[in-house]
Amino acid sequence: MAKGQEYESNRFLSGKNVEAIVKMANDGIVAIQDGIIAYSNSAFCEMLDATTKDVIGTPFEEYLDPATKHMYTENIESFDFGESSRPSFRVRLLDSKRHVVNAEMSTSDFIFNGKPAILAIVRDISEQVALEASLEASEARYRTLYDSSPIAYFTLSRRGIIQDVNTAAETLLGYDSSNMLRRNISSLTTGKERGRRSADQIVSEVLQGKTVRDVEMRMLHSDGSTIWVSVTASSLSVPDKPPRIGFMALDINRRKTAELKEKEERERANLYLDVITHDLSNVNQTLLFTIGLIDQSLDVPPEIQQLIRESNWNIDRATRMVTNLRIIWELEKDPPEKERKDPVECINRAIQSVRDTFRWKQIDVDCEVEEGEFEIVGNRFLRHVFLNVLTNSVLFTEGDNVEIEIVASNESDRVRIECMDYGKGIPDSLKESIFNRNSSERQMVGRGLGLTLARMVINELGGRIWAGDRVEGDHTKGASIVITLPKWIEEAELPCGRSKCVIFYESDHCLFCEPTKETLFGLMQEMGIAERFVEVINVDDPSVVIDEDELPMLPMIRICEDELTGFVDEDRIRMSLMRLIMKECYPGAT
Image (tube, rainbow, N blue to C red; front, side, top):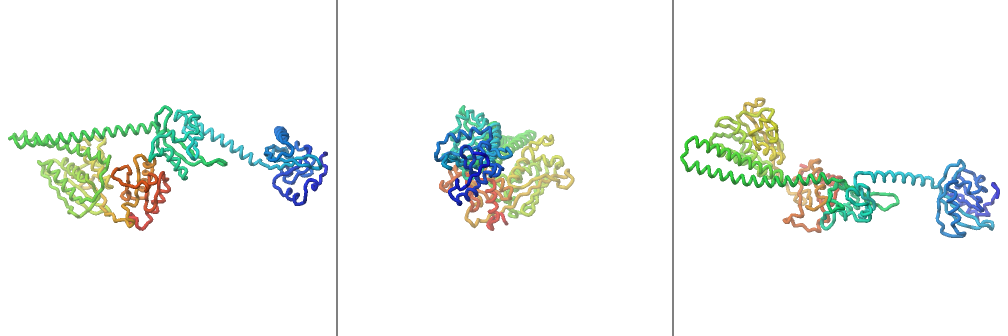
């Protein structure tokens, strides 16, 4: 058939309606007989940047890329005449400017003018091929980053089955990838809560649309040991593939091992401190009792009485040091509950203790604070603050006559208490360091732990303590120790009937409890919500009676009417706290 030979479309098409449809088609439609193009619609011509006159009568192979022409021939020859359900295949065409056009062809056979012919539907997929190439390049780059990353990556199915791992994951756990693929990630982790492994909890949280960040847990090494890791996990969306889970494990074994070792050493030191303080207290009490018997039973000369008095003083001093050590230890380990206190009661007890300790001195305390005048936030250690302040005033006043003045006043939502003496005062260079026993100042020697303890107690109560001058600007006229403490505010009963606005349920074996609690308290501090509005309930405490059906998952946070469970992200907690402080019944609103 010669190029340019005319063909009438009605020989090929059975009717004008069909011909109209073919002409309107977006895909190229072409009839090929004996290798020659016998018919082409306009879409095929546009694809080749040619006219119908140029295309019809031209051998189809002239429009095939020579490098891939054999693939077209092989596909056509593999089909039997009249075979139905032929698979489509790809070809590379060349347009009139010899630019490559990537196309997908679907073919079928029919009889044209009594001879076999091929009807082909040709779709331009150049953009799709370019996108696929770009995606392949992107996947190759991702794969390179994935494999070369120093952080262990695991790609999981929605059921937690490991589908892919990188080299760092193999190094971290000591397994080849072949020994990890198709295993459930939970088989490589340890630790359970309510019968569920840690990894199962993480997968469950991710399936709920959450992103789990920086959760510390242990994974199992091939040698049977465990490795501490920090896990971040989130959902992965890949086009044309089922959703998967990205599970990233950062090796924190060295840091965690060091932390655990430090914790063990601290607990051991606390044990030794507990034993020492207990035994020393008993020894001191025995010595005081024995010396007291000697002093009362024997007619001793004055010089011996002086030695007895000095011995009593040193033993009493050692007793105070032991007491201060124990209080500091308890403050760090388990601070006591805050309670309502009348400062006068604490001051009077401190005055009596100081007079009992320094019996040979005349101690006059002018306390201008009336009983019942103030109610402050305190605890069972508050009297030791005043005891140590008064003791320092006596110690650093020369001679046997000691004068001390105590005044108090209201300052907005606080009470200011000032203790002034007529001793040698505190130089400006020491006014801050006297409250820090670890100071390297040589002049700190002899001041003991008293004021360090005082600051710790006051800080725990939300107050402040500082040193000044009795006569402003002249420290030689005596010292002034100023304490401010919050006024006691009786909490009104909540209209909802709950004990607290926020209730946090936790467990000693809960994977997400500690990080979630840290987030909660951090946001509360940021938003100015006092910790007194929170109740923390440990479900492992035998004294706590809770129906497990009420706690579908731990941790659980009840913020007013909101209930948040599992690994709760910062934004959800923040929104619930915002709703809380906007309510009229919120006690912190007044």
